[in-house]
Length: 121
Image 1: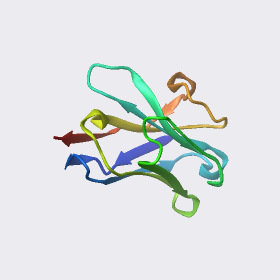
Image 2: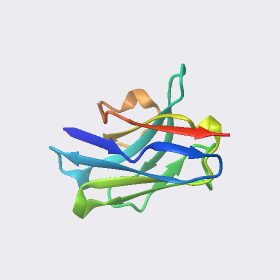
Image 3: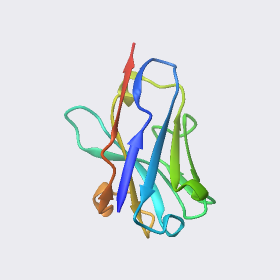
Image 4: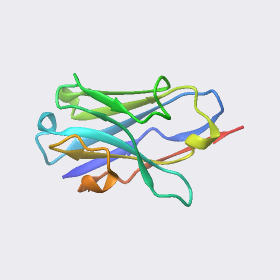
């Protein structure tokens, strides 16, 4: 299984980014895809998850109304749209896959390498 994250960058507060996670080596539409965030010096935390066909989504309270998770199974790719970014959103964002929807980061055995997001004041 290989997951490749991309789309991070430097933005000002209030700005937007779209992250991508492209998967290979698995039947993509048989897996839920989660996004996790690791702020500098802190543990990885759950951000969002999307079900196999995209009809189920869950979000951390801190990102509800600002982040949107989606997927395109034909492209083996999941996305995380980040809007109204704030400095506390800074960190490494990684995607992960699992056959079951989980909110605990330790429940995901396969991770992308992550993509860095930096939000300035």
